[in-house]
Each structure stands twice: as C-alpha cells, then as structure tokens.
Image (cartoon, rainbow, N blue to C red; front, top):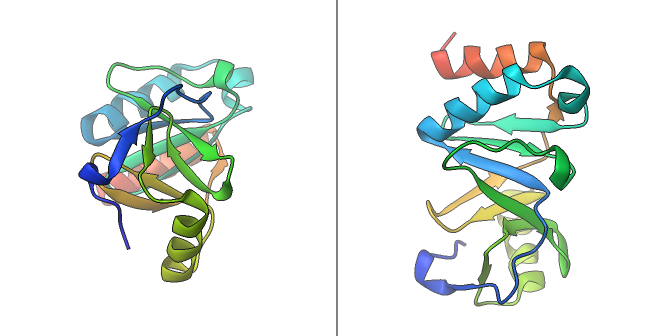
Length: 142
C-alpha cells in the first residue's frame, strides 16, 4: 500500500520537525554536514540511511540544515507513522499506519510524498563518526 503524490494535501499548519530527510545528492550533502557538526550536537541525533535517503532525527533545534533537505515528524494520530511536516495524506493516518505496519512488519515507518516511498526507521543509530563511516561505506559499495 502506498499513497501517491496526488493523494496528499498541504497541511494547514506545518508541524514541528523531528527529522531531516534528504534524498540523492542532498543526502550526501547532509552526510557531509553531519561530519562537520560539533560532537555535542551530533550526539543528540540519530540517523538511518539506505541507498536513496538519509534521515536524521532529533529535537528541531538540533536538526541540521542543508539546501534541499526536507523535514518529517511523527503523526500525532499514528505514533508509528512519520510524515512530511508540510503534507498529510488524504486518508486517515491511523488506518494508513495499521495497513503499512502489516505490509512491512516493521515500525516506525516514514511515508514520503515525493519521491513516493516507505522507509523503515527501526534501525536508527546515534550519529557518531563510526556510524557516518558505515553509511559512507554502504553508499560506496564497500
């Protein structure tokens, strides 16, 4: 089950971000930003990545910014579902979360509008030099 881009509507009021989400080349720039971040700030963040996306979660004040990054937050009606801060699905999120959880057998999940994707968030780890190196090695195919 997925929600395509025409099944979303803008949120009347964006929600406070709990995660920075970056795709493709923007993900590489976000990764570089994390490497240059003060260790104290980075220690308050968690990250997960796949070949297409890098997601960094934490308090809004600690989230890094790079040009092209977007933001997500946990949905208040469906705590296992994370959504873009500026968009919401047309369908009830509690029902959507149940269907996605059943289909993917993982939680929490990020449901993204553009590009349309579902990203498991259950393997987030603290942002450390070692974790960032593992992400870099993964992207490089090492």
